[in-house]
Image (cartoon, rainbow, N blue to C red; front, top):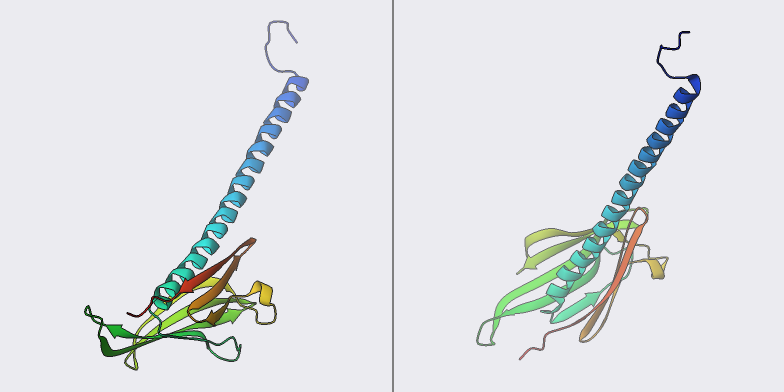
Length: 179
């Protein structure tokens, strides 16, 4: 080989390949980490939002309640029913009756959906999917969504789970006084 020829030696090529492999490995690990953190973060935000949504709808209806019926029997479809009569601006009762039962649906592996059905004068007005990924396990009272009522306070414990993310909140809802 002539002295004037230029090129890379075998050692220089091996060092360059090793540095390239380290950079590629670090980039791959970083991408993997970003994807996993994003999924975990999305799951966490989803369960928080589902618990908040269930709390919103139940609180909204319970504030108007004249009667609250809690049924924790797993054989019964409705775990919570809220009833009220409409009032006009002068404080007089209308003869319009509202019944809103909440039920667990599509229970699979201790995860369920909460559905709200609004009846007005014995006619279904609307059905709403309130929340998904709700924990429902009647055999494990510490890890299930449940309600209790001690007039005038409705206490709701709402738990949700998705992947590794879990969220539990307790709501205490006081009925509005009827004047």
